[in-house]
Structure formats: structure tokens, C-alpha cells
Length: 148
Figure 1 (spheres, rainbow, N blue to C red):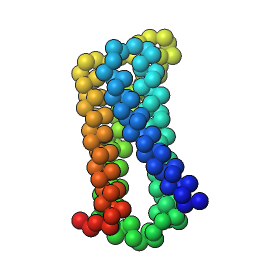
Figure 2: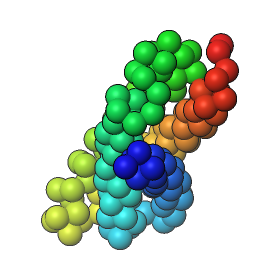
Figure 3: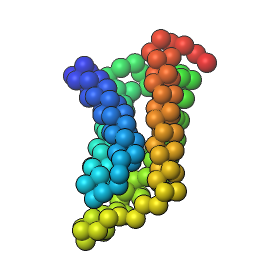
Figure 4: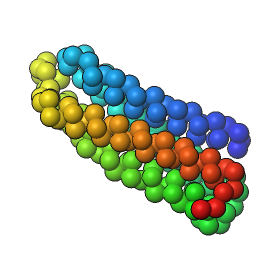
């Protein structure tokens, strides 16, 4: 069972990164209803993957890997959790923007997206991706038993 939980944890992590990269790529295209719908779909996938990461990660910490005490005394693990929370908070702004597009899309209209807002979204998504790189580094440090 622990192998399956670890597999789902890693699969969700790859899905999260893929969804984030897809959002970044789509935001650089000519904006249309189709593009907006795809961005919303990838953002939903991003959220689902984040939720699965939390669930599978919690199961791994509490039941399927080392004892919780090991993780709670690991600086790389705490850094990883802090970065995950920070990336999650940063991701709220794009998600709120994308959710607001729903009314326009249902009405068959192009959602509002100014050049400035597009640039802000691109910066935030890039910052999220940079945060994910930090999470990966912290995970490697943790897996190798490095103490900071």
C-alpha cells in the first residue's frame, strides 16, 4: 500500500507542475474563449493535484513512511512544507481571476484580461514554478537526510 501512496504523491506532483507549465504557455497565446477555458481547466487540475499532494503526503508522514517525529524535526521537511504553503497562497490570485472568468464564458463573451493583468498572472505563475523548484530541492535534501 505504501508504494501506491508514494506513487500517487509523485504523480500528483508531476501533474501539478504540468498544469502550471500549461497555464503559463496558454497565457502567452492570443487570448480567446477557448484559451480561457483551457486555462481554467488546467487551474482546476492544478488545485486537484495540490489537494492530492496534501492528502497523500499526510498519509505518508503519518502511516506509511518514517514516524511523524522524524519529519517534524527535519529542517528540509519544514522548508518544503513552508514553500508548499507559500506557493499555495500565491496561487490564490490566479485562481480567483480564472474563476471570475466563468460568468463571461457562460455568457459566450471573452473574459476581461488587460495586458497588465496578463503580465501579473505570468509573473505569479513563474514565481509559483520557482517555488516548486525550491520544494523539489528541499525534498531531495530531506530524502538524503541533510540537516540545514
